[in-house]
Image 1 (cartoon, rainbow, N blue to C red):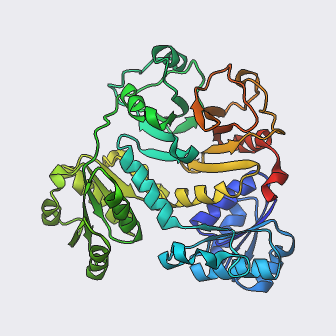
Image 2: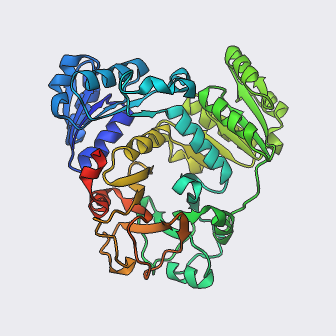
Image 3: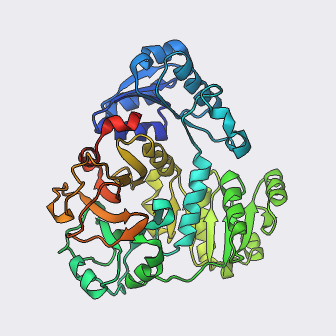
Length: 459
């Protein structure tokens, strides 16, 4: 597949890294020569320096015979123009644009993106993706990472195991014997920094970070089995009243369990906008690092604090200060992946990586076959892939134990006729089943082969 990626920032670079690693023909375009040089020197991609919205630049990048264009520059308007030119001049079949401004995303204007208007096939909103990720973290407070699959029927949980976890040193195969009705599967383990797909005989140890796929109705039981508290969060403080904080607060206000939400926003005008837009949320104007203001927000009785300003360091410090003042849980928005290793040392419970959520959203629309969802784990180390099994797939009609999966691939869930079924070696995969697989990055091309047919992607 020939792909042009416009924008060589963090998101563009990560997408290029994924696609180039799977032997696609990738060209990266950016007006910053340093970013283009970084991409071409570290990845197997072609690079072109220039303005992506210029037709001659897109022509030089190979737009006349490319299969897809991904517009991920820092400008919404440039991304729109790129898609328009790609459609009108070069007839590119698939166009994906990242748009930040909420006005462009309002549902009443969705008609804007028709082919005879602004021909964008897929619109990706980082703020919406991050807000959804924050809500998922809040819904599973014991998990450092979460993602939903099968329209919410299956949940990915990332959990760090403590010394008091009741199933430490227990071979994974014995979990099925101990909890015969449990449908949860441990699909990934990170130990001493290395991520791997476990074998049935592998044991779990304290400090392991594990990834579990579980049906939604089994979440609380799964957390309890692995020694985690499932107490509901009733009091939440949000530090940051921008688009992300506002979206999270609005969603929490719509919940039926009447969560009490307070928001702290430093900029007075932004605080006034948030106060006008929200109904039940108390908005405080001030610095999220100010202890007096945190006391006013009753931080010592808060179940969770969510720090989502546009400054990573403020988010880290505000999370640390809130935890030290008595907040039971802290979640921080972190753009810079080099800061993530500080989470444990700073006693921050979970983080949200906007780059990772945006990359996952774009990959969902890039994968071959009937891929319905993709979630990128860690620093693009692995993916959780949700896909429908086609009749032409090598998986169809075979029992799981007879399928020669790569070492880094595990099946974590199967849905048949809308019902999640227990994953065992004797289960036979049928045409139309939806499977959720954990795959280390190196094994993703083989997973795509198993899912087949690549030509289906373009139909």
